[in-house]
Length: 78
Image 1 (cartoon, rainbow, N blue to C red):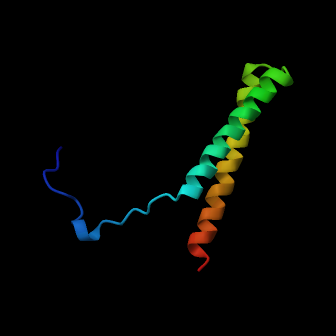
Image 2: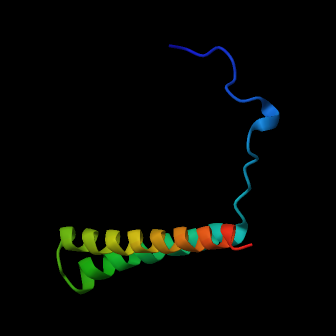
């Protein structure tokens, strides 16, 4: 099944907000920190590849959860 017209008119579409420079710097710092945590576990602690991936993935998911909760509180906290 194909749709040959727009589902929503242009005036009903939500405007997307641009991501600020500070947010992009924060994302880059978080990604660098997670990768650094992976390398620290792999090379310094010598805990193995799978354990290092698991530990850094757990830290990344925890960080994503914190960002999600903070974003929700900021949006709904009027």
